[in-house]
Structures are given as C-alpha cells and as structure tokens.
Image: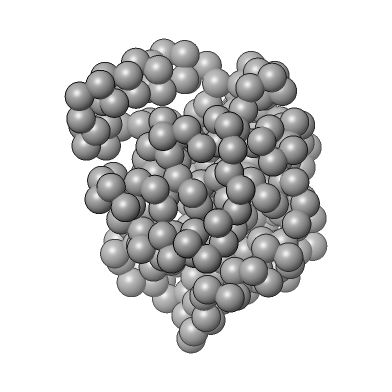
Length: 262
C-alpha cells in the first residue's frame, strides 16, 4: 500500500477502540478487522483523544447518511475512499444500491472482510480521475460520502471531482470533511497521518470558490464533534476533549460541509 492508503488504519483503529468501550460508535466489524490486521499504530495516531474524534466523525457521517436515505430511498450511495470502513453495515436505513470505492490495493484487502451482494458492490476508482467516476453506475440521485479523502486531492482535483459528480448524476447530496489552508500547513508539522509517512495534504481556502461554476451549493456546515457525542465521555475525558478537540481552534483547522445540487 502507498503511504496515503495506509492512513485507513488510523480511523479503523479509532473505531475499533471506541466500539470496545461501548460508546459513541458501535462497530463490531472494525473490532474484527483490527484484531486480524493489527497494523502498527504509533505516536499521536494511537492517542485515545484521536480515537474519540475518529469515532465521532464516523458517527456524524453515519447519521447524515441515514437521514439522506430516509429522504431518498432510491438514491445510489457512493462512498469514495471507503478504506475498510463498515458504514454499509452500520447504517440503519435500507438502500437500493451502495458502492464502496477505493484504489485497487485497498479493495483487494477489503474483499477479505466484505462480500458483494445484489445491492452492495465495490468499485476500483481514483477520485482524481474523472473517467473513473463516469464509469460508475448511473442514477438520478446519489448520496456521496467523502470522509477523510478531500485533503489528499489538490484544489483542482477536488473541484474536478465535484464537477464530474454533478455531470454524472441528476441530484447530488454530499458530505465532505476538509482541512482549511491553515490546517493543511499545520499538518506538515503535527498530524497523526505523519506516523505512516504522509506529510503532504491540501486545504480548502474558500468553499464557495471551490464550487464556483458548478450547480453545487453549500446546504449546511456541520460539527464533527456534536455535544450529544461528547456527552458520552465522562469526567476529565469529557472536559478535555470538549476544550481541545471541539473548541474554536478546531474550526480553524478542520470543517465539515454538506453540499447539494441546486
């Protein structure tokens, strides 16, 4: 695997650890996969604070996906950069078709733990290549999950991805976490992904500028660490996490946008 692809082990570790504590996110699949993979996580990537954050981020994406499926039962769900994530199992709402997409070496590993079904498929794509997106199944509506992937795409690549999604699908509803420009600069010096050899990431300076010229609009900005999830922590963990990981500084580094076609 490339260094970027190895970053998938960081959220996998976080979700497995938190799931075992029976808080925030219940993910038996992550526990199972982690027990078998046991990739060497070191340094900040192994921090319990980061495990809480990874679990909260995943839960926010899960809940959003469920809310979108409830409103759009026939929509195609497209999870780009799925890694070894089990969202296809964790969501409560039924789906007509779900595609987990990633690089070939990632999916080769993923297929050791997941099996395709009539309504669940895996697709090899490079998110920076428009042709790969155009080869995906058609649908009048698509729910797009971009969790932990935008920071590995340049501004031009990310803009091109959004453009091809709106070209490919009639109605696009998308949730995407991004680094700010400041967050990307800071990542060079301190970021858990450094532990697996990644030092180059990209930030979004202006979300409106990113989507300019497309039919995609910002519907909302969400919290990656909502109070309802922080409140599942106890004592010092709760107060420390709220101060450090959910304070004003977090918004200067990391943002979560819900986008949709107008």
